[in-house]
Image (cartoon, rainbow, N blue to C red; front, side, top):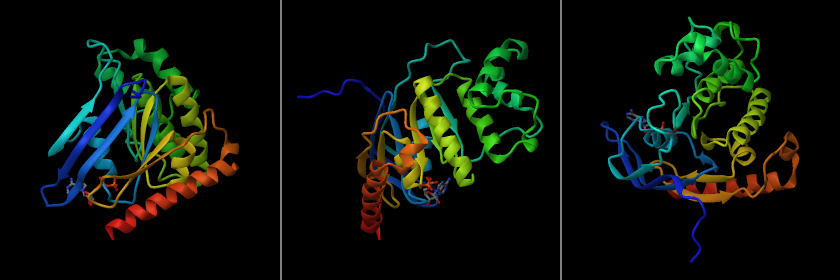
Length: 261
Ligand code: ADP
């Protein structure tokens, strides 16, 4: 018997979610994510990707099934979170500077502004925003606002990063740049990542494994292992292996959507 080396960080078994209006968003969702994986959760709009991610984050409960998310950060350190969540919208406080937006989770953990300075500045530098500490969200481009949002996740030193279509609203050039930077950060931080997207290309570029969801009610329709080592540079986008992964993923996605039609 071959036993996988690392235990799962996330284990969902037979998860069902029905909203009060009768919409069954998920039914029979099984998913495991292991330490250090970059899992892309790919599917058409409305198939339940965000619902699945919110259940993993504990922002919403499942109606049936098993939900296990490993928590390993020592209790008592409120400034360090196991899980960070990055939304599609940067969700920044418009009246607060980039520094104060990134400080927020530390502030909520009781860390005064002056003591948080090094960590906040390091998080902003980590996303390429050194020198922008005093800037307000309205003074920043969409890509920079998303960088602030990622820095706010980074500052809590999470183990598990949950991202819900974080770059969907950005132009393609900015998205490519943020994809490159996300991979660099993931390698440096040792994150386990679950990344929700409806983009086959984004999945193929970022992920170590792609889980394709069926149309609603969502469940996993198929998986594609992306056996291309990191670091992956921009050149990977024109690599024949990239094209092959996109082709294989599109085939699974089309089948998943066809089954539901
Ligand atoms: P995705 O992220 O794949 O676009 P969602 O998880 O956001 O899909 O939504 C799945 C389905 O559940 C959609 O049909 C959506 O309209 C519905 N839905 C999501 N949230 C709610 C809610 N709070 N109440 C009722 N229906 C919801």
